Amino acid sequence: MATEPSVERSEEIAAHRRPHPRHPSTREYVRIAIVLGVVTAAEVAIYYIEALEGLLIPLLFLFSFVKFSLVVLWFMHLKFDSRTYSRFFLMGLAGAVTLYLIVLLTFRTFSN
Image (cartoon, rainbow, N blue to C red; front, side):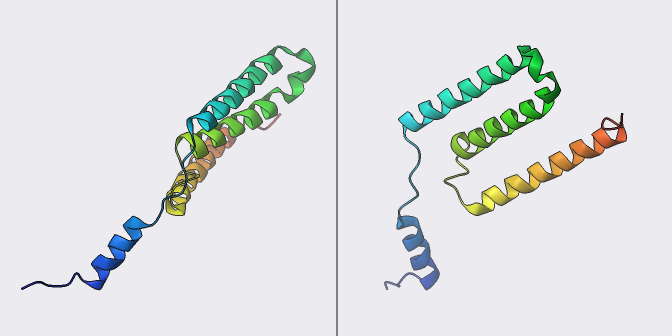
């Protein structure tokens, strides 16, 4: 006696057959790696430029944010995965940044 697959099973099969979003090619990975190398070189360079001494920390934070974003979006594939994964990742990141700021405030890092 042959039974028909349930409606849920049919929807599951249809969802599995839908085309997946395009993942980056090798060329795109190499391009991102070059950008990361250039940003790293800029980080090292600004450390040795005395005129930028007052802006050193904000610039390093900016560069590290750019590098972090590129690595997370491209190499960890969050740009191509479900938004649910991105939300969980961002919640964890927000918690880490909050904890980091609390520790800095506890040690009075921002007071002169």
